Length: 172
Image (cartoon, rainbow, N blue to C red):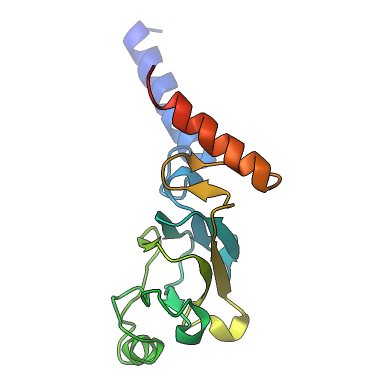
């Protein structure tokens, strides 16, 4: 067999195999914090430090929303909803009048959390199925705005990990 023909055959097989394995696809977890399956946020609870932007990615083929419960966020916090609505009621009306605020498969929504506290949110069309989530904004979080994702077992470990990543990032 000619070398070029062999490489063309092997190269094509490798690319096809990589596609079957899902390598490099839009659902890689490195590009989002919270995924959306057919009727669940994954994970359904997530902790971040103040100032962190959380990214949701629709990893399913169903349209979803990310909508805060107005009574389920800190008083000082800004309301958030995919579609940019100013209230849960407006988001629900937008969804019902033409699926406004939809996040389709592969699309993302993000929100920055600056005020410490608990943020409860839901997916409008899948709320009856229990598609709800919680963001906890605390200094003892598992993810910080500066250091990226940090795996912790307790608050002391989180503080040490944040200090170490800040020191390593100085370049000295």
